[in-house]
Structures are given as structure tokens and as C-alpha cells.
Image (cartoon, rainbow, N blue to C red; front, side, top):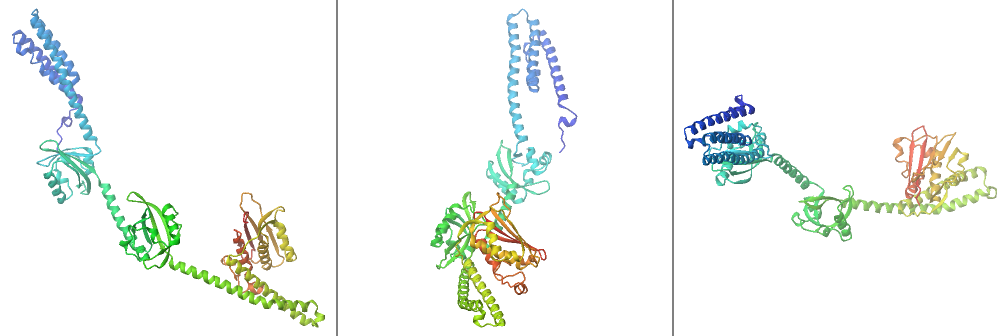
Amino acid sequence: MVDTSPQHRGFTPERDDLLRGGAIALLVVLCVLTTVFAFFLNLDILTTQFFFIPIIYAVYAFPRRGIIVSAICACAYGGIGYVFRYPDAVGLAAITVQAVLFVGIAGIIAFLIGRIREEETQYRTLFDYSQIGIVIFDRQSEAIRRCNRKFSDMLSLTEQDLQAITFPEILFSQAEVERFRERMNRDTGIEDFETRLKTKDSAACWVNLSWNRMDKNVISCTAVNINARKLAEKAGNAHMVKYRQLTENSPVGILIVQNGVIRYANPAFSRFLGVPPAGLPGKNLCSFADEPDRASCQDLLNTGDGDPGDSVRIGFRTATGELRTAGITSTPIRHFGTPAVLINVIDTTEMQRLEDKIVHDNEQRRGIVMTVAHELRTPLQPIIGYLDLLLADPKEAGLTIETQKILERCLASADRERQIINRMLDLAVLDSGKLILTPTRFSLPDLVQSVINDNGYAAQADITVNIPRDLTVEADKNRIFVVIDSVLSNAIQYSSPPRVIGIACPIDDTDSVYHISVTDNGIGIPVQAQSSIFEPFQLADATDLSRKFDRIGLSLAIAKKIMVIHGGDITIRSAPGAGSTFTLHLPKNSA
């Protein structure tokens, strides 16, 4: 469509105003000449009518300046009339009234035109700058007459492009054209009519249309772009399908619970309880819980703010009365705008049975170990006693030197067996969790020195103790003695002369733990073996070391368990050929 407006023919608003002003001035001059001629010929009917032509045109073109033009016309008319009617008083009065009417009528017209143009400006502003697309089309021909920028931008078309086509042509499909015409024929006032419009590149754009009749043949239609919402709904529906598939096929039970009542349960939870899926919604979740666990179940639902990683073990009674256990995790959500709790149910029944069996087997094993150890220690006691008596006075017993050496070896072996049995009993007690600590406050350097002196370690190695003399700790003194003895004995056993061992405990008032380190210059321990040396009967190299150093791998296991019972730990830093550092981590408030 070719635009033939004045602006596109070379006219500008300023030039247009000049042309209108010139036309008004020419009309005023012609009216003045005509009025002089009319007064001269006494044609009174012509004297007043001609001036309304420039006045009305001036007021229409320039409402405010038109009043000035009317005043000029009134003065011109009054001056001419006074010249020709003087001294006729009635004639002069009529001329005066007529001149005043010029200005009055011009003022009224200017006011009305100003109001009309103000309303028109407001309408045009709303039309052009509205955030809603607006289109005006003919009722009969369906041709688009006008549209605002929002509507044309919505379809990536210009207003001229749209004015060249009909409204049905911008609908996306023939089905939508027929639906639009059916609604249009039914009622010319429609709201919330969702359909698709066709953009410049033939893509679909979802809009919400509302239209009403401006007059008999003109329809005003508004269009709200809902394309983003529709795309989001489509994506949301796709996600909902995937989410439902995930929950329906999940091996984990999934529930949505509101105020303790099940709103949704997936098939996995239905199978877990042996209850048909239709029988779960509307039921209280805690009614399925085992009686002792109902309070825990209710607490979980009341708070609903647990860490998703934390699991609560709860027992449930199935439809057949079988007790099944499950790990329950909860997450607060909103279900249809209302607070709810998302529950994940992991069946731990088999795991619980295995744990119970392991506990039972461990109890049996500890019982067997303690029984066997007691049975072995009972006959060993008199053997050691008889050997001590014989070796106490070899001459009185009539022992030869060779026999005495044999008996000494027997006594050493028997004593070693006794120590092994005692450590097995200690380990069994520690494993049972029945060990009761007896905490006291004692001097740590004095205890370390007692360990060195009682076992003669000073004669076997160069031992340096770097512990503040006034350092006291609160723990089970006898048990800590065993731990330090085990670590120090281990350091001496696995070191070759010259043995150099350092024992230290640096003080840090900001630290809540004492770190007691024992460093040796021994053979070192490979990294792959360091994680297992604290296990019972485990050595860094069980094939060679047990024979070479006469060890069976119980002392470090016992030491580790004692430190754990105190709330601490033992760690190691070592490398083959570079020695080892064992660190005892003893909490300052371990008592």
C-alpha cells in the first residue's frame, strides 16, 4: 500500500501551518472587502455572515490562535460598521453585539474542539502505546483498518502489511478461522478467546483475544500475547509426564502427605505395604506404622524439615501383619498451594535382618572367643606356676643346664600364650561395648616415663620425651598406659639399632584435643597397608613380620578401640624406609 499522506508528498507540519495561516489571512481580507461592499450597498444580511468563515476555519485549525483571529475579525467588522452606521445608535449597538458574538462563538467552538482533540489524543496515546495489541477490522469484509505497534510487533509485520489483508488471514490454521467466525457470528462481544496467530515467518503465536463492536460495522479487538505461558505449560506438561513416569517406576516408595494424611502414593509403596494403590490416599500414614514407631512417625510428619540426607528407621505393618522396616526421609513441599511433606520410603527389611544376624553372630563369636580363652588360660596357669617353681631352684630340683634352658624356653612360650589369651579377652570385652572407663586426672609425662621404665625401653632405644612437665590429662590412666605401651613397643620392635624414638605433645589452647605423637626410625609401613594395621590379627606384612618380630597383630587393634572409647583416635603417617609416626588424639574432655 502506498502512503499518500501530506508528509510523504514533501509537506512538513511547519509548512502546513504557514499555508493554513495564509489561507485564514486571505479569507479575513476578502471578508473585510465584502463587508465594506455590503455596508456600502446596505446589504445587512451579508455584513455578518462572511466573517464566520475565517473564524470557524481558524478555530478548527488553531483553537487558541483562532480566538485571536475572531477578535481581529470583530474589530474589523466593528470598525467598518461604525463608519457606515454612525450616528445610528441602534445600528451601532447591533454591530457591537455582533462583534462580541464573533469572539464568544469562537471561544465556545475552540473549547469544544480542544476537548475533542484532548480525548482524541488520549485515545491515540492509549492505542499507539498500549502494552496490549489492538486491532480494528471491518465486520462485513473482515479487512483490518488499523492496528497499534504492539499488535504489529507481535506478528513481526508492519501496519501497512496488516492493512492489506483480512483478520482471518492472520489466524494460524483453517480450523481456528472457522472457530473464530463461529464465535463472531454467535456474539460480537467476546472475552478470553484463546487462539493462534500466524507471524511473518509462519510461526504460531498464542494470543488471548477479546473483541467488541464499536459501531454496526467496526470491531475493536485486543490481543494479549500468551505464547510464553503456553510454551511453559507445554514444557511443564512434558516434565509432569516424565515426573510421573519416574515416580510410578521408582523402586523407592514416594508419598505426598498433608496433615498426616496420604495424598499420593506410588506403586512401590503400595507393594511395600501390600495394600492396593486405591486404598492408600486419604489414610493416615502413621496408622500403618508399628506401634512402638508411631510417635517417631508423627514427629517426622510434624517437623517435615529434616535434612534430605538424614534417614529415620521406622517399622510398618503390612496388610498381612508382617513387620517391615524402612528408612524414611522427608522434605517440605507445597502441594496445590498447601504445605505438605514429600516422603521417600526405602525398604530396609532385608538390611535389618542382616544387621540383626551380624550382631547375633558377633555376640556368638565373642562368646566363643571368651570361652575358648578362659578354657586355654585355666590349664596354662598351673603350667606356668610349676615351671616357675622348677626354675626358682634348679639345683634343688636336680635340673641339668640343658634341661634348665629347655624349661626356660617353655616358660617364655607359655607366658607369651598367656599374653595372647589376655589380649584376646581384652579385645572381646572392647568389642562387646561393656568396658567401663575409670577416668582420673594424672600427669601425662609421668605416665609416659612409667611405661618406659616398667618395660626397660630406655635400654633398647634412645627415647626423647618432649611433653610439658605440668601437663595433666583426664582419662582412664590404666587404659592410656596400655595404649602408649602398645605404640611404643611397636616402635621399638620394628626399628633396628640405633633406635631413635621421639615422644611429643605440643600444647595448643585453642585445640580441644591433645595430640601425642610417637615417632621412630624403623622400617616404615606401605600406604596400602596402613588402613588395616589397626584391625585384629593384621600386620603390615603378616607373612614375614609375625615371625621376624614375634607379633600377632592385637596390640594396635586394642589401642585403637581404647582411644575410640575415649572419643579419640589413632592415626599414622609413614613410608617404607622412612620410619613411622603414630599420633594419639585424646580429647581434653574425654572423661
